[in-house]
Length: 155
Image (cartoon, rainbow, N blue to C red; front, side, top):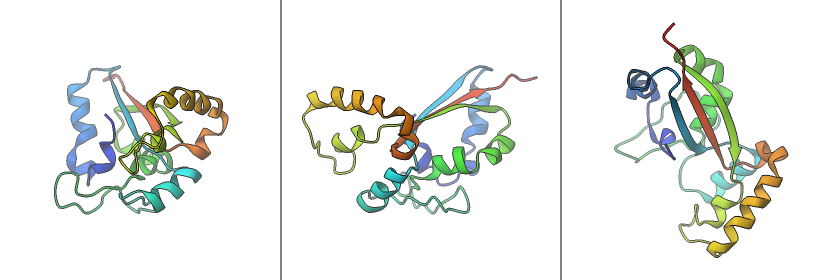
C-alpha cells in the first residue's frame, strides 16, 4: 500500500488490521510506504503540504466527510513509532518487522508537494544514490517510511 493508512479516518472502525489477519496466512505481510515524521518532514509537511500533519494527535482518528477527504499524514508515525507498544497490544496478530525511513529529497523533486517535477527525470538516480549515503542520519531527514508488518502464526 502506498499513501493509504494516513487517509483512514478510524483505524479501528475500518477493521483494516483485523480484516487483514483474516485474509493473510501466517508469515504473510502488509507492506506500506507512508509519510513519516522527522525533523525535516515536519517542516515540509507543516509548511508546504496540503494535508494535516499532527504528531500530537491524541487518538488514531480524525474527522472525514468522505473518501480521501481527510487525513493525518503523521498517523503512520503516531501508530508505528510513538504508539508502537499500543499497536502491538491492540493488534497482536501482527509483528512490526521493520520501519525503514526513506526519501528525504526524491519526493520533493518529483513534484510530490507541488505536483510539478522540480528536476528532470534523469536526476532521480543520482538523488537516490545521494539519499543512500545519508542512511545513518535518515531518521532525521526521512519524508516517508517503508513499514513492514508480518502476520504471526495462529499458535
